[in-house]
Length: 264
Image (cartoon, rainbow, N blue to C red; front, side):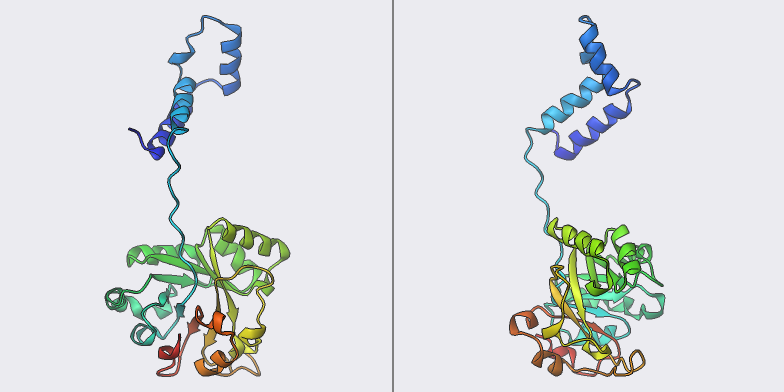
């Protein structure tokens, strides 16, 4: 018995092989009672589609969820060694921060839910992340959407995971992300970078976009903002509702020793 995909491919092949339009074919059947329509490519395409109706749809595998994920730039060794093993890891696809490549085997052996890479969709583009994921046999890749332009780049590449700031998007972009989440095509983590001058997680808003988790910033942001600093895991925990804390994600760079082990 042919599979769903085989019937789809066969129908498409027959349709491409036709030399007449669909309208011409229908008109010919109506006008010529002796027309041998069952010998045509259009008939064979339709027959494949008719058979397809009798096959139950293939169940779609649930996508990965952006929850309990560590997004890594230059702290890959610490992330692999310290982050709880129920956390997925997203390594940087930026060539400047790819010292993690020798750690993939160790991370795999820890039984983590997934390993992937991420790109900022600005200086490192999705095609680079996709190639890195393929080269190192990673499970997935993620895009960044801190601005509308970054988001547009990530969505154009059909990113399955997204970390960013919904307040930096247009209303139409928020609607598009919301729709993709509802369709199971995307999982989103809203940044809660108190270290960079943003509000505490308890006051962070994803602007109505469903987020799988909040992503806290575990890096010294003093060079980014006048009031930027390093905010510890303990500080973040004190300002995050308990239900939200259990699924927390984190972006890490130059993270203090022992910090990642304190993640829930």
